[in-house]
Image (tube, rainbow, N blue to C red; front, side):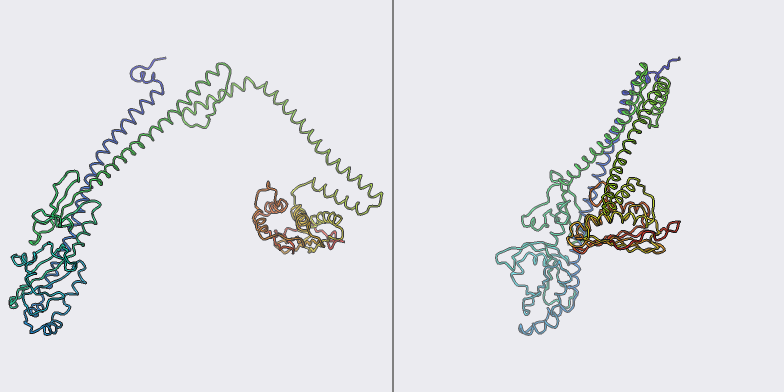
Length: 601
């Protein structure tokens, strides 16, 4: 045989275990780890880019909200500054406060209050004038020395811009001695030069809490602040009180982003500053790292597990085949229990099993055949002995009953003679049991024999009645479908009754159904017990409760399927009625009424 040379020959010399190890290391583990490292680097870069983009979007969103708030206040100032009525009323000289109130109620009135409702972020609207004839109050004030000493007035008076935006600290008019941060839109009212007798100024105070709330909404991702052109922090308003300045970018606090707040002259140089939450970046990085390790673990362990299973499958079966082939040298042809495998090794094992079985059969065929024949003869003998034993006991019982029958007849015990005859017939029918169908006439005759035995037992305290339609007597029913119900009534219903015991058996037939019922005047069944019995009809027969009733129901179901209806009705101290309805099947041969069924006695 020619020997394989080169790399192929070298590979053929490597044990199977090492081959699988090399395949796993070079073709599975190393590529998976390399791919995971590259994937981690790409994912980390994507996450960093995404987070920076999200932070920039957050900064721009907060900047837009803040700018919308400021632009709304500026638009409100423009609406007020172009109202001609305000100029007319504030330039008029009033003789006394009464004259001012009379004229102001017509011209000024509640002109500014609707704006407060339309702009919920506006805290107050104030108009100051140098006209000393008006009365300060509401939204209109005289520009006195106290007002001129305020920071807002100096900016409004000295600025060349028509609109100014200013944040300053001034006394709180509601709390004595307290100071308050104001964020105000200032405007000099000079739209109509003809009404320029007195200087007029408009001051719209924006709620600083509204701006603070806008900044706090993004606090999870960015620590936001608003700074003016000189780098002083205006918002949050608490930082303005401490004269805070913009912190340097970077550092342990995280990445710092900036965005201009707007291009208008009154907010020139203002910017929105956001410092990224370093803990958020760290948490995101840790999640990416955790995901990488989980992915690496899954992508490594799953192929490792699969490679191990495949290796175990091949290695285990090949070694087992090798061991069985070694045993074959010593004439031990044991089969390998792996015949269901469908791969090449499974086919090889099945071929070995067929070969071993054939050899085993050829060697031991004659010897085993003789042993099997002897075993079969022995089993046949044992079966014949059991059959003879099973026949001895019933014969002995019937011989005993016949002896009692002879003695009772000789001594004139007529009632005992009848009872023994009925008992003998009952036993013969039970011993010759088959589940074939019989006519209702035969079933009721058999049931009456049992009732006569019970009549003999209870005497005058027991009666039974048959009310059976003649057409029902010819219907075919399963054997022993009425007698167990009667026996059940005698055993459970009438056993504890002290007075007269009665059993009533009724049967009627229509073109489609046969209706049979057994009724007693016994102690009845409690409602809970009755519900339990109904629920046990389909239970297994290996339980000890209600065996007779369940046996009848199961056999009826076997004969008629879903076309069987069984009803159990009972009341305490009134009695119980068990009835069933089955398809009517008349017998092929016409039978007469036969034995007259009626009242006992």
